[in-house]
Length: 322
Image 1 (tube, rainbow, N blue to C red):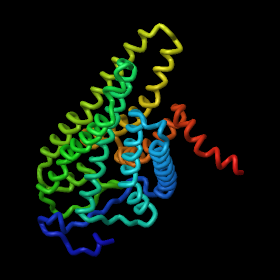
Image 2: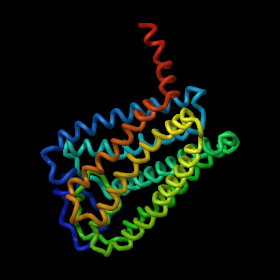
Image 3: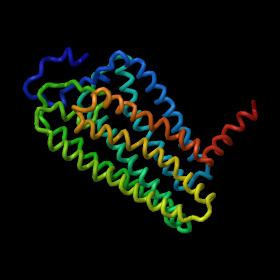
């Protein structure tokens, strides 16, 4: 490895000249091959499933509705998130390719944080979509126009760039030669903890940004669904009430899968160092970047009849020919 061949570090190291070593999941080295097979399978399903979902939504005019346009954005973000992390993880597990330059590490960190904040904004937009559809059905088409959806997408991207300013905080730190990251991919606190400076600013800034971006998204999502439930339970017809709840079921499942492991990993990295085994934290972080992207198209495919019908119709000529 490059870290073994490199000359000894001086007291202070220029980060641009540093190569880091990602060691995978410390404590579970003997299980790396089995974990990698699982991750590879999930990553393959995630990429194929989400690309097919995007293809279906783009090519089927009947799916050109706000709900499905937001779903296509979510599918694209899932592909990018898993692709930003899984290939390097598999290279570590299979080929022991553990070296990564400081620039590549920061770039990976940027894309992970950027895509995460974008996905959070998309989930908020999808909750808003369900809120308008159920609470203000007569105004749905006038509120959620194509231009409005485009503005939401643009705002999500711009906000993510502003939030991900935290990557520059790792440049202000002084590094003293430690270059081993006990993780399978690069993230903000993993790099910051290698510095010999006080990283309190990084911790506070990261926590503040998380609470003011994704934290507020969660609050608004909860508020949206509280209003939705109040409206649904005022519907006299049980059939109509059940139909309204079914339209939200898949979204609630996706929200839980997205935020629960993300916040677990976030707080465990900052406050749970002595109570949560490190390999558990890293294992959750590894599966977090492939499990939700794998399950999202499956959940929407199973619970959304329109997508089921379009998928069956898409493959029906093949079955007819055979």
